[in-house]
Image 1 (cartoon, rainbow, N blue to C red):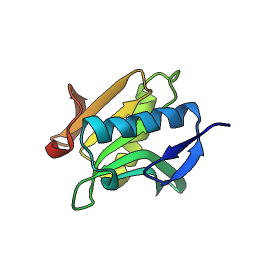
Image 2 (spheres, helix red, strand yellow; image 1 turned 60 degrees about the vertical axis):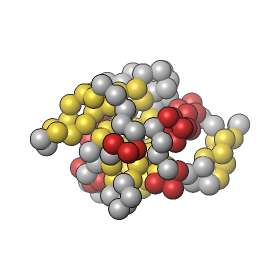
Image 3 (cartoon, rainbow, N blue to C red; image 1 turned 30 degrees about the vertical axis):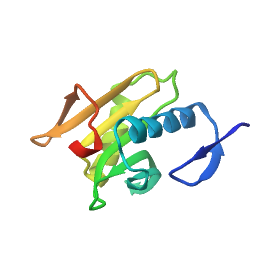
Image 4 (tube, rainbow, N blue to C red; image 1 turned 120 degrees about the horizontal axis):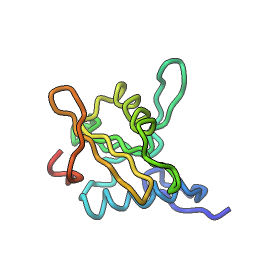
Length: 129
């Protein structure tokens, strides 16, 4: 199997379809949204309901509190409410202001306002977090 360098985990990982989407979105965060690499985490481990989970990407503020949770799916997976529910599960533990779901073809962002998440028209630049 092909491998790809994950700059956040600082190692080569198997290039699965989902990993390809994750690496593409890491580059979007870094190159377009100006997120410093050292303030992103990949495959961030947590425990919820007695199960172990891993958030695909977490963007941290400078004080190291979570600002954005990104859930990546392989390109053929549709971004349904079920995908958003997974990101919301991670939010219940990490308390981020932004949720982003992507399959590489479709990317949707949600921002928490007044305690509820609603669709956002644009992805936030790091300076706007």
